Image (cartoon, rainbow, N blue to C red; front, side):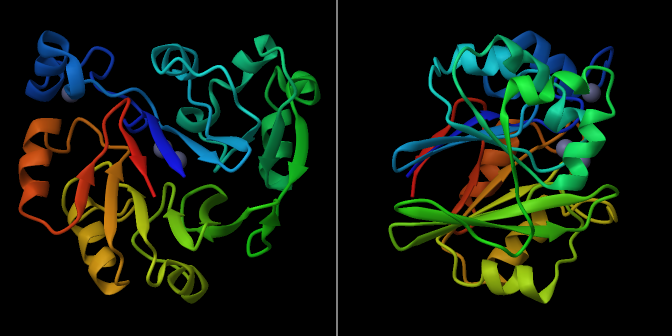
Length: 254
Ligand SMILES: [Zn+2]
Ligand SMILES: [Zn+2]
Ligand SMILES: [Zn+2]
């Protein structure tokens, strides 16, 4: 399976609107991998292109990566940085499946434009812990710990297991740990570099999690301007075993 990281920044993106910190000033001046759009990932599965999250930057991200085919969207949670671009799909001219947990779907429908949601895509409700089976692969959503209901994803394809943890504290259910155990690839959202950050798992803690779970490869994404700039994060990752720092446009194979 091919995985494309379309946006790799956290809620504010980098550079942050109106921010004059050193990280954001460098991002504006140098551009490239220092700039990060909000979070989205495209999983190219057998016969099915699955887009994870529709941030406010999704239009630019899809244009940049020249993506013309999506079969389904998986929404992790209702926060703006993960769903703010959903309405863009009113202009998408092909059928789309929309995998959203029923409570999250209802909260999106309360938005002013929510009445148009059924026009955007076919709602396919999912329930955490229950596999969604396709011909040739399946995925199992699992609940994580975030201020709003939020779901990670375990994708099983061709004897490979990929875990996407979504926005979460560094505290998982035993169920989630059992899904992560021995995964081929773990993708973790880490806005900050190191603890203490009660609300989000950090980059350093994600490396500990990778080691504890016996995972081969770890990709860190959803980084913010308080984290190290991309080049410094990459330098740090070179001293780690199997750690990759995602940037907008990164493609990897599992
Ligand atoms: Zn987020
Ligand atoms: Zn900043
Ligand atoms: Zn969030």
